[in-house]
Image 1 (cartoon, rainbow, N blue to C red):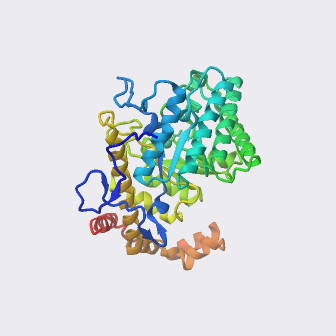
Image 2 (cartoon, rainbow, N blue to C red):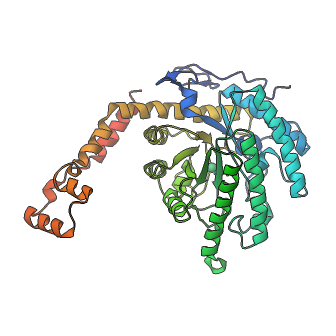
Length: 441
Ligand code: XUL
Ligand code: CO
């Protein structure tokens, strides 16, 4: 098999003083931490769509990076992509990948033909996975948003025929995910949202989305899928209003439609910021509801209002992300998928490696910083003490349900003014502690 990146050797860990751009400074895949290799803690994944397909095309210009993999016909290109993807994963010590069905094989004339050619590509992918037994499918998904038939949504389309088509497509993508041993299946609500309420039956669209998700769960469980289903919240783009706006909205939806047990959340950093939340906020909401699942790691640009999907290089955000991941008990079925693309101007083959190295080192460092933050204990201790009034006295009685409004009125009348029960929030001191930990690594 020909090598796609003959000039790039396997990327090794050289430590933080290395000046070799094609080396890890912080990510040592085989370093043992708490009895587990770093690669197992972090469960990095390659995103097929950005890495293997995305050529830098944007609405102002054509692609700048060659992602043809030396093939001009779609079937040959699908195969070459698979070969190149495994070379990338192997050279970067990345053990997982994620895909949309159409990243693996595009649409052909009819659904039957599209399925047949997709299945042939999946056969080849399955063979390849045997050759590289440590490479695994983190999650699969269906691209039910780019074809014109999905212009008004898939599960939320006003057309029942489109709903049926989407169901058929998702069924097939679930089959492939199961076949390849995927531990997750993602629903990112592509065009599940609206452009204007003037033409939208909001209630029916929500109900139908839930119907589609129930059918997916019923089908996949019958077929033996034991992994997690994920919803990936995003507030806008491509539609003006995406129904899966943010973590809290999605949790409400899952509860309303009795989907809570089968779903977890796949939290994406840039989607969080588009919802005007921090990445940590979305992870905290997911974790505290027992619904933390997986991560799409990337970052936006604080000055831009769209999903730039940049490779994550912000150590501070990565640290607070990994703080939440560790507190959630680490990854189980989920992992850390780089839903990120090198900038349009970073168009050379080496840029694929340089951008992953940047992202992986950022999260390796973030992981170590988060562990240090937790081991240091100052943040946790401060927060615990801040709520100490709930452990005794009236606080304890409120929590145990022993008092109601009458008793609390009596208590307040007797107690008098309560500002003396408050202490400083010490935000600046806590932020300085985070800096102190970050810069002592
Ligand atoms: C789009 C996005 C998707 C999902 C998978 O913003 O994040 O790539 O992760 O469909
Ligand atoms: Co994503």
